[in-house]
Amino acid sequence: MNRGRAPAAVLFDRDGTLVEDVPYNGDPRRVVPVAGARTALALLRRHGVRTGVVTNQSGVARGLLTMDQVRGVNARVERLLGPFDVWAVCPHGPDDGCPCRKPAPGLVLAAARELGLAPGRCAVVGDIGSDMAAAAAAGAAGVLVPTAVTRPEEVARAPHTAPDLPGAVRALLGAELRLPDGGGVR
Image 1: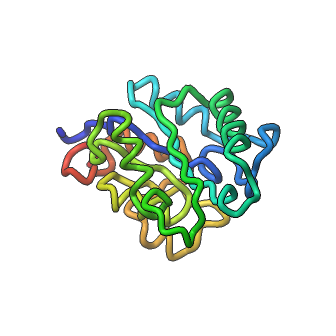
Image 2: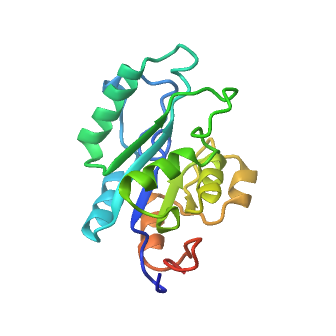
Image 3: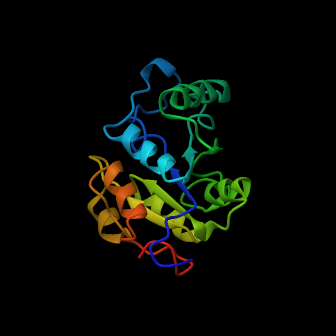
């Protein structure tokens, strides 16, 4: 990849990153986009960058949600902020040891595969350390957008941070970061 070339796809965490975090939300009416989400996504789409969502939904494993409820919430996110090119959902709990649950790389790898891209051509934007760990484990770039729930040590360990979603997208498009494959954003 040449210096300054944007990632081919940006994969977003859902809760706390694209939409307000409502723990174990199974009600589409409670979906509220975070400030700047529409602007950030519009900017990516205007530049021809594909978008996706990679989300842990452990409420399914915990018996607090059904996959139908998760799909209903995702459909609402899609109506408010879409279209997204790919969705990857992990319904497992933290102790299930599955390879898709962030911080494992499975969701990022699955999304990249579905898009026909090498993971190094992708970036992940999220609000907590497990989002950044999943990006790194998959070989994708990571941009942390801290929120009230982001721990200071997660911010300190993040490869890149941005104050908000539009700032993260501008950094990715403006060649301020470097994708793990050595190209892309500086």
